[in-house]
Figure 1 (tube, rainbow over the protein chains, first blue to last red):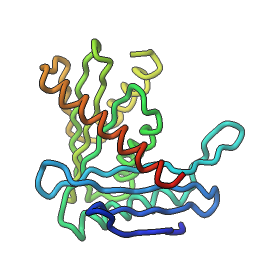
Figure 2: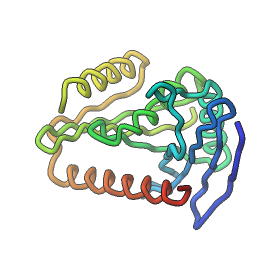
Figure 3: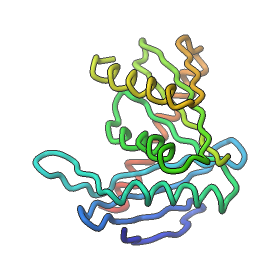
Figure 4: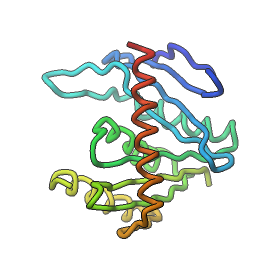
Length: 133
Length: 56
């Protein structure tokens, strides 16, 4: 994984990186939430190359993202939060891979999930609360 | 909600429940909850677009 830039801009920590094989670029960004010691994490795909119309994720993306999140929680003594609305924003299906990855990667992760459903507003909203045990 | 989305999300809910993760489901959210979620969705969409615009 090639880190292009890792810094804090306007109070927002972020890591801009590029995968080695597929050369995809992502931004891993943390924004403070209204809850003390809690950051919302965003994995934003910036440049994604497709092969035969399909997005191929690099194998090294999983350990890199997991290590980054665990390191961030450890260094900042904080918890992480992220949400997904399953209607629209299809890119965010990528984000929920975090949970599968983290649970399989490190057993010291504690996670709670809150789901809100409302058919009239086409909402199926997942909220994830993650902290270290 | 379309069937594909429902299938994928139901499958995911089953997965996380089987993993021993605490899951709470609110199937009758009040109006303040809906408004909070709409604001979060709008904020995130704007944040994504802003971030992408910086790197394009």
